[in-house]
Image (tube, rainbow, N blue to C red; front, side):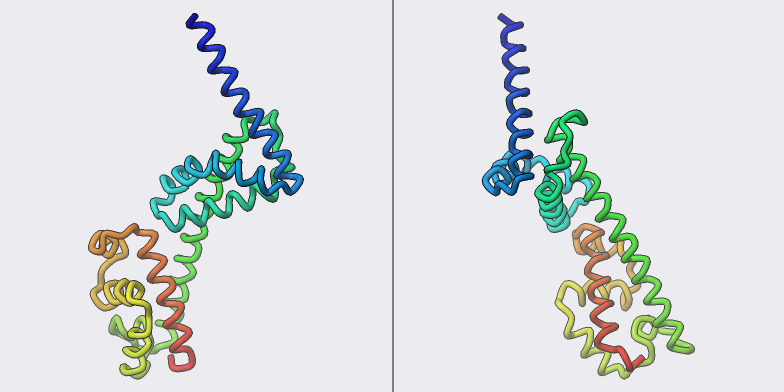
Length: 199
């Protein structure tokens, strides 16, 4: 009797795999219904994997969307001999989440480089304000900072005017580090656009 139950469990797993393979074939032929069914069966697991890697809900949602776009585009290239469809989707998700982390790190390095250039173009700049904005009119700087969305403004004020590190800001605001980095990056880019030609 126990052997029968084990066999049935194995049969059920194989049936699910076979159904997923059939869904991927249909997706490769443009079947939106098959795509919806595949999404419903795998989205929770794939989201949890992305969230575990990124520790940020919005980033995980972005990764999930990109993964399913990739599944839609590449369903025809899936090879059943290389593993189950669910494992294939998990691998796509893990790789895409890691790509997001690497992209954020590259953008952070570019932002730091841009900040250094701003400082270099403002001879003799000594204060935190001058390091970020050069020797622009203080009223113009205040106005530009005030126009930022509240979350970006708060992160930039804490980083550049209070001298806190990104880790300290993350802890202080009880927000993920990636979120803080993204806010500072977006805020700096907006400030640079607003103050371009003044520095």
